Image 1: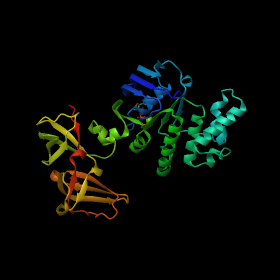
Image 2: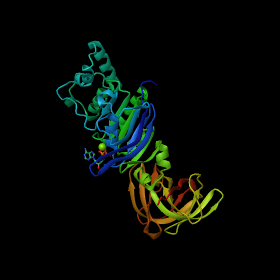
Image 3: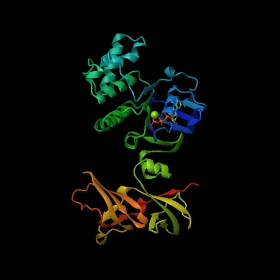
Length: 366
Ligand SMILES: Nc1ncnc2c1ncn2[C@@H]1O[C@H](COP(=O)(O)OP(=O)(O)OP(=O)(O)O)[C@@H](O)[C@H]1O
Ligand SMILES: [Mg+2]
Protein backbone atom coordinates (compact mmCIF):
# COMPACT_ATOMS: atom_id res chain seq x y z
CA UNK A 1 0.00 0.00 0.00
CA UNK A 2 1.99 2.94 -1.25
CA UNK A 3 -0.39 5.58 0.11
CA UNK A 4 0.16 4.75 3.74
CA UNK A 5 2.99 5.89 5.95
CA UNK A 6 4.70 3.96 8.73
CA UNK A 7 5.35 6.19 11.72
CA UNK A 8 8.02 5.51 14.30
CA UNK A 9 8.49 7.47 17.51
CA UNK A 10 11.84 7.02 19.22
CA UNK A 11 12.48 8.26 22.77
CA UNK A 12 10.21 11.23 22.18
CA UNK A 13 10.11 13.93 24.85
CA UNK A 14 8.50 17.32 25.22
CA UNK A 15 8.24 19.61 28.24
CA UNK A 16 6.50 22.92 28.73
CA UNK A 17 8.48 24.61 31.51
CA UNK A 18 8.11 22.33 34.53
CA UNK A 19 5.45 20.14 32.90
CA UNK A 20 6.79 16.97 31.27
CA UNK A 21 3.98 16.61 28.74
CA UNK A 22 5.52 13.64 26.89
CA UNK A 23 8.15 11.36 28.45
CA UNK A 24 10.12 8.87 26.45
CA UNK A 25 7.52 7.56 24.02
CA UNK A 26 8.67 4.67 21.78
CA UNK A 27 6.23 3.25 19.26
CA UNK A 28 5.80 1.99 15.75
CA UNK A 29 2.54 2.71 13.96
CA UNK A 30 2.18 0.37 11.02
CA UNK A 31 1.03 1.16 7.47
CA UNK A 32 -2.74 1.32 7.31
CA UNK A 33 -3.13 1.10 11.10
CA UNK A 34 -5.93 2.94 12.86
CA UNK A 35 -3.85 3.78 15.88
CA UNK A 36 -5.35 5.51 18.92
CA UNK A 37 -3.76 7.34 21.82
CA UNK A 38 -6.17 6.91 24.70
CA UNK A 39 -5.81 8.57 28.08
CA UNK A 40 -7.26 11.06 30.53
CA UNK A 41 -7.20 14.80 30.04
CA UNK A 42 -3.71 16.28 30.21
CA UNK A 43 -1.81 13.03 29.68
CA UNK A 44 -0.02 14.35 26.58
CA UNK A 45 -2.08 12.99 23.67
CA UNK A 46 -2.42 16.23 21.73
CA UNK A 47 1.25 17.02 22.29
CA UNK A 48 2.26 13.70 20.69
CA UNK A 49 -0.05 14.34 17.75
CA UNK A 50 1.22 17.89 17.27
CA UNK A 51 4.79 16.63 17.20
CA UNK A 52 3.88 14.04 14.55
CA UNK A 53 2.21 16.79 12.50
CA UNK A 54 5.18 19.09 12.96
CA UNK A 55 3.33 21.81 14.90
CA UNK A 56 5.38 21.12 18.02
CA UNK A 57 9.12 20.47 18.14
CA UNK A 58 10.32 17.55 20.30
CA UNK A 59 12.90 18.38 22.98
CA UNK A 60 14.46 14.98 22.42
CA UNK A 61 13.93 11.92 20.31
CA UNK A 62 13.05 11.23 16.72
CA UNK A 63 10.00 10.98 14.53
CA UNK A 64 10.40 8.79 11.45
CA UNK A 65 8.05 8.43 8.51
CA UNK A 66 8.94 5.31 6.53
CA UNK A 67 12.35 5.18 8.24
CA UNK A 68 13.11 8.79 7.35
CA UNK A 69 13.65 11.28 10.17
CA UNK A 70 11.17 14.15 9.77
CA UNK A 71 12.08 16.23 12.84
CA UNK A 72 13.33 19.10 10.68
CA UNK A 73 10.63 18.90 8.02
CA UNK A 74 7.95 21.60 8.35
CA UNK A 75 4.31 20.52 8.72
CA UNK A 76 3.22 21.42 5.19
CA UNK A 77 5.92 19.18 3.70
CA UNK A 78 5.05 16.10 5.80
CA UNK A 79 2.10 14.97 3.66
CA UNK A 80 -0.11 14.86 6.74
CA UNK A 81 -3.76 15.81 7.11
CA UNK A 82 -5.00 16.86 10.52
CA UNK A 83 -8.56 17.18 11.80
CA UNK A 84 -8.82 19.23 14.96
CA UNK A 85 -11.37 19.15 17.71
CA UNK A 86 -12.47 22.67 16.80
CA UNK A 87 -12.72 22.21 13.10
CA UNK A 88 -13.89 25.78 12.32
CA UNK A 89 -15.30 25.80 8.81
CA UNK A 90 -15.39 29.06 6.89
CA UNK A 91 -18.95 30.28 7.48
CA UNK A 92 -19.13 32.43 4.33
CA UNK A 93 -18.01 29.61 2.02
CA UNK A 94 -20.21 26.80 0.74
CA UNK A 95 -19.55 23.16 1.53
CA UNK A 96 -17.89 22.77 -1.87
CA UNK A 97 -15.68 25.82 -1.37
CA UNK A 98 -14.71 24.76 2.14
CA UNK A 99 -13.51 21.40 0.88
CA UNK A 100 -11.90 22.72 -2.32
CA UNK A 101 -9.96 25.31 -0.34
CA UNK A 102 -7.00 23.06 0.36
CA UNK A 103 -6.60 22.39 -3.36
CA UNK A 104 -6.67 26.02 -4.43
CA UNK A 105 -3.04 26.64 -3.56
CA UNK A 106 -1.94 23.71 -5.66
CA UNK A 107 -2.49 25.27 -9.06
CA UNK A 108 -4.63 22.42 -10.31
CA UNK A 109 -6.91 22.69 -13.33
CA UNK A 110 -10.48 23.61 -12.41
CA UNK A 111 -11.81 20.27 -13.59
CA UNK A 112 -9.41 18.39 -11.31
CA UNK A 113 -10.42 20.52 -8.33
CA UNK A 114 -14.06 19.80 -9.17
CA UNK A 115 -13.46 16.07 -9.49
CA UNK A 116 -11.37 15.69 -6.31
CA UNK A 117 -13.75 17.81 -4.24
CA UNK A 118 -16.83 15.87 -5.32
CA UNK A 119 -15.00 12.60 -4.66
CA UNK A 120 -14.05 13.68 -1.13
CA UNK A 121 -17.64 14.77 -0.44
CA UNK A 122 -18.88 11.44 -1.75
CA UNK A 123 -16.54 9.63 0.59
CA UNK A 124 -18.11 11.29 3.62
CA UNK A 125 -21.67 10.89 2.28
CA UNK A 126 -22.28 14.58 1.62
CA UNK A 127 -23.02 14.43 -2.11
CA UNK A 128 -25.80 16.87 -2.99
CA UNK A 129 -25.05 19.33 -0.18
CA UNK A 130 -22.26 21.17 -2.04
CA UNK A 131 -24.08 24.51 -2.15
CA UNK A 132 -25.06 24.72 1.51
CA UNK A 133 -23.25 26.88 4.00
CA UNK A 134 -21.99 25.49 7.33
CA UNK A 135 -24.85 27.18 9.22
CA UNK A 136 -27.30 25.09 7.16
CA UNK A 137 -25.74 21.79 8.25
CA UNK A 138 -26.14 19.55 11.31
CA UNK A 139 -23.19 19.08 13.65
CA UNK A 140 -22.40 15.69 12.12
CA UNK A 141 -22.52 17.07 8.60
CA UNK A 142 -20.18 19.91 9.56
CA UNK A 143 -17.84 17.36 11.05
CA UNK A 144 -17.87 15.44 7.79
CA UNK A 145 -17.06 18.61 5.82
CA UNK A 146 -14.03 19.05 8.07
CA UNK A 147 -12.99 15.48 7.35
CA UNK A 148 -13.52 15.88 3.58
CA UNK A 149 -11.46 19.06 3.67
CA UNK A 150 -8.56 17.01 5.03
CA UNK A 151 -9.09 13.96 2.82
CA UNK A 152 -9.25 16.01 -0.37
CA UNK A 153 -5.52 16.71 -0.26
CA UNK A 154 -4.93 12.93 -0.19
CA UNK A 155 -2.52 12.87 2.75
CA UNK A 156 -0.48 9.76 3.46
CA UNK A 157 -1.14 10.12 7.14
CA UNK A 158 -4.36 11.23 8.81
CA UNK A 159 -4.23 12.74 12.29
CA UNK A 160 -7.44 13.21 14.24
CA UNK A 161 -7.61 14.99 17.60
CA UNK A 162 -10.91 14.17 19.36
CA UNK A 163 -12.80 15.03 16.17
CA UNK A 164 -16.14 13.72 17.44
CA UNK A 165 -16.18 15.26 20.89
CA UNK A 166 -18.68 18.02 20.15
CA UNK A 167 -21.29 15.76 18.58
CA UNK A 168 -24.22 14.32 20.50
CA UNK A 169 -24.06 10.69 21.60
CA UNK A 170 -26.00 9.17 18.69
CA UNK A 171 -24.18 11.11 15.99
CA UNK A 172 -20.88 10.26 17.57
CA UNK A 173 -21.60 6.55 17.25
CA UNK A 174 -22.71 6.97 13.65
CA UNK A 175 -19.61 9.00 12.77
CA UNK A 176 -17.39 6.38 14.41
CA UNK A 177 -18.68 3.78 12.00
CA UNK A 178 -18.20 6.15 9.08
CA UNK A 179 -14.65 6.91 10.13
CA UNK A 180 -13.85 3.21 10.25
CA UNK A 181 -15.37 2.71 6.79
CA UNK A 182 -13.49 5.66 5.26
CA UNK A 183 -10.22 4.67 6.84
CA UNK A 184 -10.54 1.05 5.67
CA UNK A 185 -11.56 2.17 2.16
CA UNK A 186 -8.58 4.48 1.84
CA UNK A 187 -6.14 2.24 3.71
CA UNK A 188 -4.50 5.39 5.02
CA UNK A 189 -2.50 5.26 8.27
CA UNK A 190 -4.57 7.12 10.85
CA UNK A 191 -3.62 8.34 14.29
CA UNK A 192 -6.48 9.23 16.56
CA UNK A 193 -6.57 10.88 19.95
CA UNK A 194 -9.37 10.47 22.45
CA UNK A 195 -10.17 10.13 26.13
CA UNK A 196 -13.28 8.10 25.26
CA UNK A 197 -12.61 4.39 25.75
CA UNK A 198 -15.61 3.21 23.73
CA UNK A 199 -14.44 5.30 20.82
CA UNK A 200 -10.93 3.88 21.09
CA UNK A 201 -12.20 0.29 21.30
CA UNK A 202 -14.52 0.62 18.28
CA UNK A 203 -12.22 2.49 15.94
CA UNK A 204 -8.75 1.19 16.49
CA UNK A 205 -6.61 -1.57 15.14
CA UNK A 206 -4.22 -0.76 17.99
CA UNK A 207 -4.39 1.42 21.08
CA UNK A 208 -1.68 3.10 23.15
CA UNK A 209 -2.94 3.90 26.63
CA UNK A 210 -1.22 7.02 27.97
CA UNK A 211 -0.85 8.23 31.51
CA UNK A 212 1.07 11.28 32.70
CA UNK A 213 3.11 11.65 29.53
CA UNK A 214 4.01 7.97 29.16
CA UNK A 215 2.60 5.13 27.11
CA UNK A 216 1.65 2.46 29.66
CA UNK A 217 0.35 -0.27 27.33
CA UNK A 218 0.03 -0.88 23.60
CA UNK A 219 -2.21 -3.53 22.09
CA UNK A 220 -5.30 -4.41 20.13
CA UNK A 221 -8.62 -3.32 21.66
CA UNK A 222 -9.27 -6.92 22.74
CA UNK A 223 -5.84 -7.16 24.34
CA UNK A 224 -6.16 -3.89 26.22
CA UNK A 225 -9.63 -4.71 27.53
CA UNK A 226 -9.10 -8.37 28.36
CA UNK A 227 -5.47 -8.34 29.49
CA UNK A 228 -4.66 -5.01 31.05
CA UNK A 229 -1.11 -5.07 32.40
CA UNK A 230 -1.70 -2.59 35.21
CA UNK A 231 -4.45 -1.38 37.47
CA UNK A 232 -4.28 1.98 35.74
CA UNK A 233 -5.13 0.48 32.34
CA UNK A 234 -7.83 -1.83 33.69
CA UNK A 235 -9.38 1.07 35.53
CA UNK A 236 -9.27 3.47 32.62
CA UNK A 237 -10.55 1.07 29.98
CA UNK A 238 -13.89 -0.26 31.15
CA UNK A 239 -15.13 -0.92 34.66
CA UNK A 240 -13.27 -3.29 36.95
CA UNK A 241 -13.56 -5.07 40.26
CA UNK A 242 -10.13 -5.34 41.86
CA UNK A 243 -9.04 -7.70 44.61
CA UNK A 244 -5.66 -7.77 46.29
CA UNK A 245 -4.84 -11.41 46.85
CA UNK A 246 -2.07 -13.78 47.92
CA UNK A 247 -1.26 -17.05 46.25
CA UNK A 248 -2.06 -19.97 48.57
CA UNK A 249 -1.14 -22.83 46.30
CA UNK A 250 -0.88 -23.85 42.66
CA UNK A 251 -2.53 -27.12 41.69
CA UNK A 252 -1.94 -27.94 38.06
CA UNK A 253 -3.60 -25.21 36.05
CA UNK A 254 -5.60 -23.88 38.97
CA UNK A 255 -4.18 -21.27 41.29
CA UNK A 256 -5.83 -20.86 44.69
CA UNK A 257 -5.69 -17.41 46.21
CA UNK A 258 -7.06 -15.60 49.24
CA UNK A 259 -8.10 -11.96 48.96
CA UNK A 260 -7.50 -9.28 51.61
CA UNK A 261 -11.14 -9.65 52.57
CA UNK A 262 -10.62 -13.35 53.21
CA UNK A 263 -12.43 -14.56 50.09
CA UNK A 264 -11.02 -17.70 48.43
CA UNK A 265 -10.71 -17.50 44.65
CA UNK A 266 -9.43 -19.77 41.93
CA UNK A 267 -7.63 -18.42 38.87
CA UNK A 268 -6.56 -20.20 35.69
CA UNK A 269 -2.79 -20.34 35.23
CA UNK A 270 -1.29 -17.84 32.80
CA UNK A 271 2.14 -18.08 31.31
CA UNK A 272 3.17 -14.46 31.83
CA UNK A 273 2.30 -14.37 35.52
CA UNK A 274 4.29 -16.08 38.28
CA UNK A 275 2.20 -17.72 40.96
CA UNK A 276 4.69 -18.48 43.72
CA UNK A 277 2.94 -19.28 47.00
CA UNK A 278 2.87 -16.18 49.19
CA UNK A 279 3.26 -13.72 46.32
CA UNK A 280 0.76 -10.92 45.96
CA UNK A 281 -1.34 -10.22 42.91
CA UNK A 282 -4.07 -7.91 41.89
CA UNK A 283 -7.10 -9.65 40.44
CA UNK A 284 -9.49 -8.00 38.05
CA UNK A 285 -13.00 -9.24 37.33
CA UNK A 286 -15.13 -7.34 34.84
CA UNK A 287 -18.75 -6.68 35.87
CA UNK A 288 -20.14 -8.51 32.83
CA UNK A 289 -18.22 -11.69 33.72
CA UNK A 290 -20.19 -12.14 36.93
CA UNK A 291 -23.48 -13.97 37.22
CA UNK A 292 -25.85 -13.08 39.99
CA UNK A 293 -28.45 -15.39 41.49
CA UNK A 294 -30.24 -16.30 44.72
CA UNK A 295 -27.92 -18.41 46.90
CA UNK A 296 -30.14 -21.49 46.75
CA UNK A 297 -30.30 -21.37 42.96
CA UNK A 298 -26.58 -21.57 42.30
CA UNK A 299 -25.97 -24.34 39.82
CA UNK A 300 -22.82 -23.49 37.87
CA UNK A 301 -19.37 -24.37 39.08
CA UNK A 302 -16.73 -21.75 39.68
CA UNK A 303 -15.85 -18.98 42.06
CA UNK A 304 -18.58 -17.92 44.40
CA UNK A 305 -18.94 -14.90 46.65
CA UNK A 306 -22.07 -14.24 48.70
CA UNK A 307 -23.32 -10.75 49.40
CA UNK A 308 -26.20 -8.35 49.55
CA UNK A 309 -27.48 -6.05 46.78
CA UNK A 310 -26.75 -2.41 47.69
CA UNK A 311 -27.96 -0.68 44.54
CA UNK A 312 -29.52 -1.67 41.26
CA UNK A 313 -30.00 0.39 38.11
CA UNK A 314 -32.17 -0.86 35.24
CA UNK A 315 -30.94 0.54 31.90
CA UNK A 316 -33.00 -1.54 29.51
CA UNK A 317 -30.23 -3.43 27.76
CA UNK A 318 -28.39 -3.84 31.03
CA UNK A 319 -28.91 -3.98 34.78
CA UNK A 320 -26.09 -2.65 36.94
CA UNK A 321 -25.82 -3.93 40.49
CA UNK A 322 -23.56 -3.08 43.35
CA UNK A 323 -23.25 -5.99 45.72
CA UNK A 324 -21.67 -5.70 49.14
CA UNK A 325 -19.55 -8.66 50.14
CA UNK A 326 -17.12 -9.34 53.00
CA UNK A 327 -15.45 -6.32 54.62
CA UNK A 328 -18.00 -3.93 53.06
CA UNK A 329 -16.31 -4.37 49.71
CA UNK A 330 -18.62 -3.50 46.83
CA UNK A 331 -18.63 -5.49 43.62
CA UNK A 332 -20.09 -4.21 40.38
CA UNK A 333 -22.13 -6.67 38.37
CA UNK A 334 -23.65 -6.08 34.94
CA UNK A 335 -26.42 -8.32 33.72
CA UNK A 336 -26.67 -7.88 29.98
CA UNK A 337 -29.91 -8.56 28.14
CA UNK A 338 -31.95 -8.71 31.35
CA UNK A 339 -35.17 -9.59 29.53
CA UNK A 340 -36.93 -12.40 31.37
CA UNK A 341 -34.25 -12.58 34.03
CA UNK A 342 -35.01 -11.96 37.68
CA UNK A 343 -34.38 -8.46 39.01
CA UNK A 344 -32.70 -8.35 42.40
CA UNK A 345 -33.80 -5.57 44.65
CA UNK A 346 -31.88 -3.64 47.24
CA UNK A 347 -31.19 -5.78 50.29
CA UNK A 348 -31.57 -9.12 48.47
CA UNK A 349 -29.16 -11.86 49.56
CA UNK A 350 -27.35 -13.06 46.44
CA UNK A 351 -24.49 -15.20 45.21
CA UNK A 352 -21.99 -13.99 42.64
CA UNK A 353 -20.56 -16.64 40.37
CA UNK A 354 -17.68 -16.32 37.91
CA UNK A 355 -15.31 -18.72 36.24
CA UNK A 356 -11.60 -18.97 36.97
CA UNK A 357 -10.85 -17.84 33.38
CA UNK A 358 -12.63 -14.55 33.98
CA UNK A 359 -10.34 -13.58 36.84
CA UNK A 360 -7.45 -11.69 35.27
CA UNK A 361 -4.29 -11.46 37.38
CA UNK A 362 -2.28 -8.24 37.16
CA UNK A 363 1.29 -8.31 38.48
CA UNK A 364 1.84 -5.79 41.28
CA UNK A 365 4.79 -3.56 40.43
CA UNK A 366 6.63 -2.05 43.32
N1 LIG B 1 1.58 25.14 24.89
C1 LIG B 1 1.61 24.68 26.14
N2 LIG B 1 2.18 25.38 27.14
C2 LIG B 1 2.25 24.90 28.40
N3 LIG B 1 1.76 23.71 28.78
C3 LIG B 1 1.19 22.96 27.84
C4 LIG B 1 1.08 23.40 26.48
N4 LIG B 1 0.44 22.42 25.77
C5 LIG B 1 0.18 21.44 26.66
N5 LIG B 1 0.63 21.75 27.89
C6 LIG B 1 0.54 20.90 29.09
O1 LIG B 1 1.07 19.62 28.74
C7 LIG B 1 0.27 18.57 29.29
C8 LIG B 1 -0.23 17.67 28.17
O2 LIG B 1 -1.14 18.42 27.38
P1 LIG B 1 -1.92 17.81 26.14
O3 LIG B 1 -2.66 18.91 25.50
O4 LIG B 1 -0.97 17.05 25.31
O5 LIG B 1 -2.92 16.81 26.87
P2 LIG B 1 -4.12 15.92 26.29
O6 LIG B 1 -3.82 14.53 26.67
O7 LIG B 1 -4.31 16.23 24.85
O8 LIG B 1 -5.37 16.43 27.14
P3 LIG B 1 -6.92 16.68 26.71
O9 LIG B 1 -7.57 15.33 26.71
O10 LIG B 1 -7.44 17.53 27.83
O11 LIG B 1 -6.93 17.36 25.38
C9 LIG B 1 -0.80 19.26 30.11
O12 LIG B 1 -0.40 19.30 31.44
C10 LIG B 1 -0.89 20.64 29.51
O13 LIG B 1 -1.35 21.56 30.45
MG1 LIG C 1 -5.87 17.13 23.75
